[in-house]
Image 1: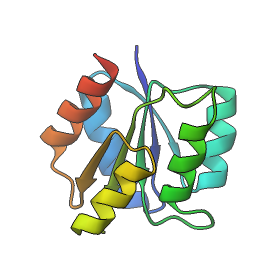
Image 2: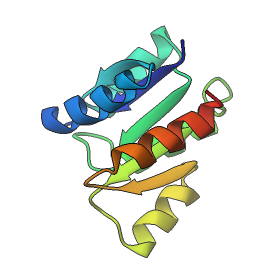
Image 3: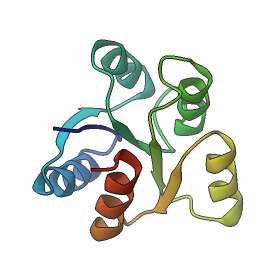
Image 4: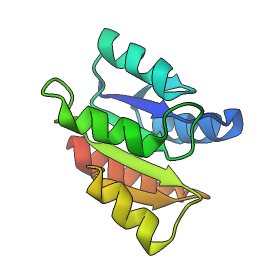
Length: 121
């Protein structure tokens, strides 16, 4: 079973994102900050990451850049999700290494389709 790490600081969004991924047969682990996510990634490397941009501490952009620069995590597909949805936000997310950028409120079908495509589920 493929594992997706959802990194989101808003509990409601965590439940929505995790719920729609679980309904599609994916195992989901969650983190509420970049620091918590880094700890969980060290313990269990996920098959994909769904990452919010605005997080306490380091931003999603910073975490994405860090993960994509490390040999042990550079191959993990990252889907950034954010209310920040201007062209420059999307550009910056992709420039940091994100494999996809989806706007909030999230389209559940698009999220599932994107994650499955990236992990070849």
